[in-house]
Amino acid sequence: MALIVHKYGGTSMGSTERIKNVAKRVAKWHDAGHQIVVVPSAMSGETNRIIGLAKEIMAQPDPRELDMIASTGEQVSVGLLSMALQAIGKQAVSYAGWQVPIKTDSAYTKARIESIDDAKVKADLDAGKIVVITGFQGVDEKGNITTLGRGGSDTSAVAIAAALKAQECLIYTDVDGVYTTDPRVVSDARRLNTVTFEEMLEMASLGSKVLQIRSVEFAGNYRMPTRVLSSLTDPLMPLEEEANSGTLISFEEDTNMEQATITGIAFSRDEAKITVLGVPDKPGIAYQILGPVADANIEVDMIIQNQSVEGKTDFTFTVPRGEYTKAMAVLEGSVKAHIGAASIVGDTKVSKVSVVGVGMRSHVGIASQMFRTLSEEGINILMISTSEIKISVLIDEKYMELAVRSLHKAFGLESA
Ligand code: ADP
Ligand code: ASP
Ligand code: MG
Image (cartoon, rainbow, N blue to C red; front, top):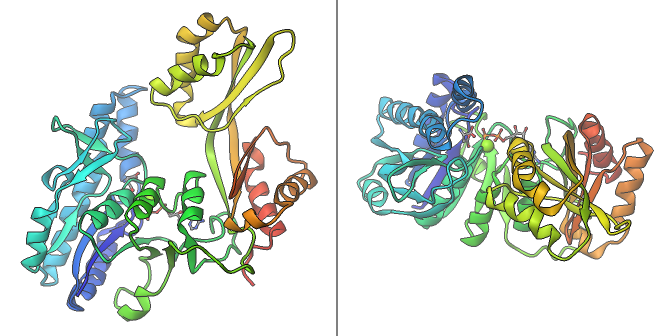
């Protein structure tokens, strides 16, 4: 007998029919003698619908109130799934984040989990119940409801698995694993049987939304075995077969020298670029520009500062597209006048494409192959950033899919 956490995404919970299938699958695992905690997302489209309602009321909704409503989709899901389990003869109980409780900080819309109380859940499991806990939401120390950022149910699931010291966390989704790139963009993308934790971390941070980045961080910090697999297969398929399907995130250092140099191509459509023009080139300028942006809780990604001409330079950086207006307001508000910049310009039609692979450490020439491929397609590179295991470029968003497809081919990632 093992304690296992299952997570089901929006598509997997997308209709009452699908919820009944989830219940059948969960019941199969419980019948095999396992203790099961299930963490569902809101039904697909629901979180978007709720956020859309808020935006009809005001363009920049108050984050506390936004979390109050955005968290409700998951509450519907846990209730329906518990009912579906009860309807097939299982004892099941649902909890919202605050009932567990899952405690977070107070950073509304992108809160971080601080602690999870396992007492109530363990008692229910020991009493033979299946426990169904809302993904995506938590509660801060003042009792306010918080959410963990879009795609946050993955993080809820892995964090709950870690807190309960589960044997494995199974992330059921609408694809049958992690692919060399998004299979919806490149039809001959190849499924990976395993992906190293480091590579998954890079892919998630660079935009592969199959797992939210914080879930991968939790998996790494707690060495929680985590597997991505399909929820759309026959729920009654043999358990052994299901348990070994999909993609396992591995914590082993890959010693296989023959492994592919590049594991995957990640991309993010939602980037924005900001350039502060004509700033005095003197110590402290980067801090004076980026300090207030960080204070506004906006994440900065790529950064470049140009060669200075007559003591003046240009400073360019990227932020998530959704934070662009806020970042511009911060810069126009106080920073521009304070540092004596000439002007600030922005571009919200940019995307980031990255090649990822631990094999890059032992191979040279990956960057030049990447740049050659993009140049052959006539794609202009706006910014570049690198780490030991990834190279990212910022490009015009119109060429994003072309870039992903041509790089996938150039690095020989397609399925045989
Ligand atoms: P869920 O609702 O189950 O959380 P998501 O839509 O958040 O599902 O994530 C699954 C989606 O991630 C897939 O449908 C796929 O389009 C996308 N995706 C992006 N990159 C990858 C990748 N490298 N491998 C698999 N899926 C990917
Ligand atoms: N329902 C939330 C969202 O749409 C959380 C999740 O699906 O993981 O972002
Ligand atoms: Mg998701």
